[in-house]
Image: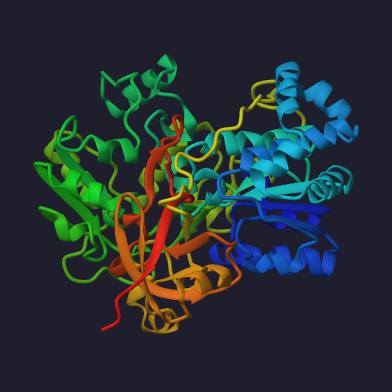
Length: 528
């Protein structure tokens, strides 16, 4: 996030797209409600489903799944047509304007209505409210990123914030809500194939030299590695062994039949986790890790805030600290790693400029937002205050690309997947909670009343949901939360795993799969 969570209370207009916030980020969802009900903020919700925050919104744009670039660029077309852009900001702080502006010509209100299903008059109301309503904050989540053109979706969000002059100010910004605890921290620590910690590129010779000297590893590669999805795809070919820590690809990856086939080709699968997950059941070796309550360490949250989490209980049985397991393995390969949380954090500080000023002593008092260049620095509440790190921000021309798979005569429904308030990710923790499991015990498929009538279905009926990749049997939930010809399946439930159905088409840049849209069909299950 460029800005802080609490700054939503300073926003005059809140633009929410691709985020079911009250279910997936309920604490922040409550903050949005507070901004609307008590601070008078205007809320614009863009979502194919009628999420809870629609009830608090001034405008709801129910775009077709996968049409976000058209929607966002169409709003920008109207903003420029009506002269509502932040002219001085764009002139002083942006570049690439001419090509970008030319790309907007395609996104007329008529064309955008055709592509998105959002009426022209609603597009115009939205553009006017957002561009002229005061400081605007944009929030998005995986409904934007999990597409075969997810990077374009993000760039379209950035474009909107640039042309309205909303980056670099309190209460504005481009703000992705991260999907899980410490996803931000994992990325900060180099958990991406093309960077070291703090997003220092592996292609940078000076960065490689710095890490090489610190790690006593003389030949660090300048070649980026593989993403998670590409690693799974390479199993049995380029990859013969896989070491999985706290991840459950046999539930979380798309097209699970194919994942199962690929993992079976490995010579060795090692899984380090706190429970015997669907992936751990396939492993040759299982290493028992520890829960968050059994460890001390830092967590970096979605607003870049580094926080210290202290051990509350001792590990039980044969479970070891995760860093001890990794260090023990490294020792067998001839390398010595730091063996305490604070020593590990000192190495992070030494190698990562954005973390240099953050210390355990400071974190014992309060979390600190990076970048924090020295120990006297208070941390950074929001980014790009006076200038962008590269000088000027780039306005990106974007061409419209449809989803990788759209409905047709045979596969006539649009399937999307997501999370529920009561469960978390692949369910390996939340479904072991008796209370949460009692509230939502099994999966289901949301179907619009008009589609339920066509198929002779009622809530509680059993139905087969299938795509070109697989089929599940689940329970019908008739609801107008979804649009006609659209269905929604939560992905927490192994016995009706949504990711048996999802498309493994990837964004060419991020390599993130298209979880959020694919062609599907439904049919009633035979009654016993």
